Amino acid sequence: MSSLQSEQNKLRFLIRQIQRMRDINFIEPAYAILQIIIIDASVFILLIKSNYFLQNLVISGLIFSVLIYLLVLISDLDNPFQYDNKSSADVDLSRDRKNFKTFRIF
Image (tube, rainbow, N blue to C red):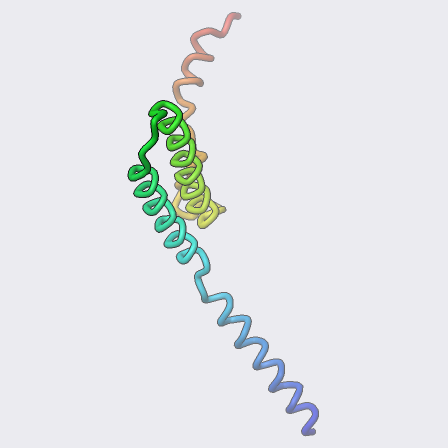
């Protein structure tokens, strides 16, 4: 009977561990880290002085675009099945539907 109880205790421990891991939100630290990186990168890029303003502007724009895209991607991955009916991939297609109806030739 004791081996059965020990196996039952192991099973209880594993179930509690699974519940603990399920309840931990791993995405909030990713938001915080990315926001810190965006703020730090923007401050550092603004503080850098360069003789080539146009090149500096293009590189800064690319870096900001990539970091903001990562922030949007993480927020979209946080809600993969669109529980709130919101997603960054949502596009309003009503104008396209209206145009298709007007250009239909029959």
